Length: 267
Ligand code: KIV
Ligand code: NA
Image 1 (spheres, helix red, strand yellow):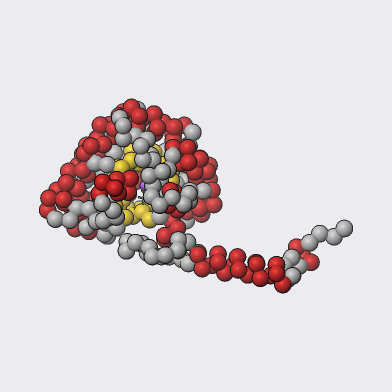
Image 2 (tube, helix red, strand yellow; image 1 turned 180 degrees about the horizontal axis):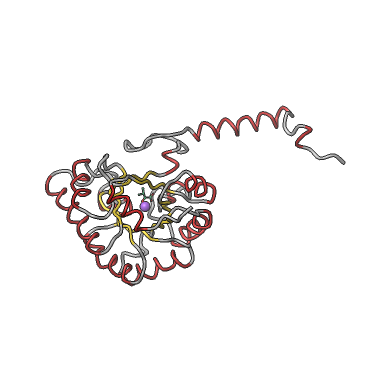
């Protein structure tokens, strides 16, 4: 099993082969997704919503992310491990960004980091890349800016906004990003970006023309309750399955069916 590396992702994209990314925040999911052939495991700051129970990604700390990254990088033997830089840990300056990103590489065992922003983040991306840290950019809808953007909404509708999205994409590529996530971007705009850029585009709610796709694993596997966003496809019903298992355990404990003789020790 050869480790997936950035040149492999670029080579796949050059050949027109699609690849996939899933979030992972712990050992078992990392192990399972790695074995299933997912090329990139993203330790996303969506852990704020999907692990820590916050309403947004904003409260997530560097420490909260480094611990999860360490668990994932210990378990992943083939996939590339990509760690999200949390809100407030890189926006102040390129130097702040470099020092934070270095922690994810040294303490978390990440192979690369992801940060949100386009044109305005170009100097930070350049600084990290110059210091030996591969960067995946993230443009379109950027959850860390949800209060600026006015909530979860598609970005890049209309010609002016589409041009802005294209400008962001060009800027992060020129700054040295090895890939760019496009979140909630109209499919035709994502197609234009994917056509124009050489580096892989990774879509989430960005239509079928991206070079790669990413989903939050609890969405993809149906662990999350409530209504999932439009761009999510549910490939399993883990919530139903776990709920059934827990309910059955509780009933068997109550009825005395569990534990049976085979689960017990002789004197
Ligand atoms: O944090 C995250 O999970 C992400 C993906 C949705 C791209 O940034
Ligand atoms: Na994120």
